Amino acid sequence: MEHPRRSPGATGQRLMYAVSGVLAAAAGMAVGHLVAAFVNPSASPVLAVGSTVIDATPTPVKEWAVRNFGTADKPVLLGSVALVTALAAAGIGWVSRTRPSLANVLVVGLAMLAGLAAWSRPASAPFDIVPALVTAAVGVATLTGLRALIPNLPTPGAAQESPLSHTAYAKGASGEPARRNFLIGAAGVTVGAAALGALGQKLAAPATLPSSVTLPKPQTALPPLPTGIEGKVPGISPFSTPLNDFYRVDTALVIPRIDVGNWVLEIGGKVDKKLSITFAELLTMPMIEKDITLNCVSNEVGGPYISSTRWLGVRVRDLLERAGVQHGVDQILSESTDGMTISTPIQALTDDRDALIAVAMNGQPLPARHGFPARMVTPGLYGFVGATKWLTKLTATTYAADKAYWTQRDWAIDGTVKTQARIDTPAGLATYKPGKVAIGGVAWAQLRGIKEVEVRVDNGPWEKATLGPDGGTDYWRQWFWVWDATSGRHELTVRATDGTGALQTDKRADPFPGGASGWHSIVVLIS
Ligand SMILES: Nc1nc2c(c(=O)[nH]1)N[C@H]1C(S)=C(S)[C@@H](COP(=O)(O)O)O[C@H]1N2
Ligand SMILES: [Mo]
Image 1 (cartoon, rainbow, N blue to C red):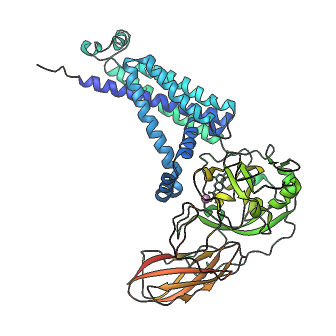
Image 2 (spheres, rainbow, N blue to C red; image 1 turned 180 degrees about the horizontal axis):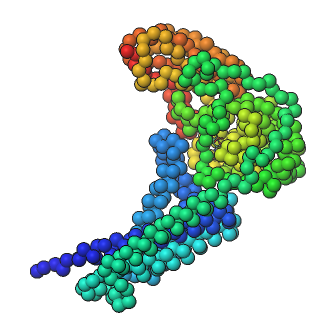
């Protein structure tokens, strides 16, 4: 017996339904993204789902993503969300061929998932559902409109497949002109969606430009940071990291946009007097300058997530003294405008290391991506326990009562920076000529300082490196040693001794849960 064959037109028609589904989703999300620019940028359907996925991703997967994609992890994540959404939308478009009402329900359902995601964000407001509602409406309207343009099959046999396409057959056009209509419609939706989405992206730019802030003068200005040795040893990290090269690590898919006119820093919890400090008021408090190296607990041995600069800010201690922290408090839980929570030991915020609420880095207001208008910086602690960006709240509490974002994800509670040294030059696996080759890099042990750096070639003796200028115990130290390189494949290893005389451990540890350890080694080829 012969099987009835689908006409080539049937495949094309199915494809058009699938495409309609995808374009309906794209148009809905684009308009939702635009509406979110007015309501709350992070309530955009794409971003709300993306952020929810980030928070729900198990720590090992996140670690893997950071290792493989580095700072491109966010585009990769958004791309994956888009791909999954497109597949679902294509499926819905397909369904709409025979069951249009069901397809509409599915479109609304998909948009509502994004709405729920927006609603469940830590810093969400009731109106954050609005972009998703708009997405649903635009999605259904687009799907309906595009479906009406899909040409019917010329053969009545296909029309028999379902009563619905039969109805469509009765009123719709068929053949080439109709196919052209669909293509024009689809192209129009594509262009429109791209334009509206881009407009939304543009409108969601920062509310206050950091450059509009006038910085206060520090109480006592520090002498300028000494000139580093990067001019002398090419390839070594600059002593002061240029702002554009400062590493960035956070969970924010949209950089929070903050209007400094409305910004307040709330100080509450177990305190004698709750405080609510405006940005203008913060700027009138005594400001100090401090040179601090900031690094991420996720940094591998030899990794890039570390930078150094001069910060300007108010001592956290001064603020906590004004509020009067009560007996029994062992942590300050800080919160950002985007709902990030970070626990910092009370000791680290009140001792003489001078943890800061920083408003400037390298003589400029904080760039938006580094926490504008104010962030914490705690010398000696990894960023995830002491460097809250877009800071808006400090709560005096206990570790027993409150858990922070990373602690809930099993990272260490004690985030003390480990002593580390990194080889910046020569580049690993690169080939150099025999003769003088400068080996150089940076070493750090915030709070303790660096006393000595040693380099070893293969299994040779440990050679003492020359140290660069001293930026204080909380700042990294540049180092170099000139090697008389001989032909062959060589392994170079570096290790540091901190200011207390303790040699950096050679015991390898992964970044999770408390920071990487071990000596940095690279292989170079001399020929
Ligand atoms: N609001 C907020 N603050 C945050 C984070 C974040 O995800 N959100 N990440 C922390 C981590 S893990 C690090 S290492 C530092 C990085 O600061 P930077 O991006 O300015 O270098 O910010 C910290 N502060
Ligand atoms: Mo971090």
